Image (cartoon, rainbow, N blue to C red; front, top):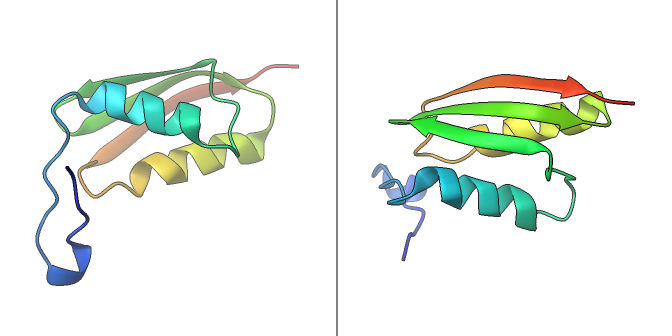
Length: 82
């Protein structure tokens, strides 16, 4: 089980399969329609690729992924579709 130890100053260990963890977190988040977003992970670097309907949704997805303490950087290649 992963616990957030941000208050104690300890760094949180990343999940074993971080890409799958982040995919599930995005999919289960009720505020996002992220079914067209692909998550790739190299080390602690996250790459987001895909398309969304709104620019605000793109920004929220990026902010959501960056909020995890085990994510160092996020590169986003998310585009908009109409």
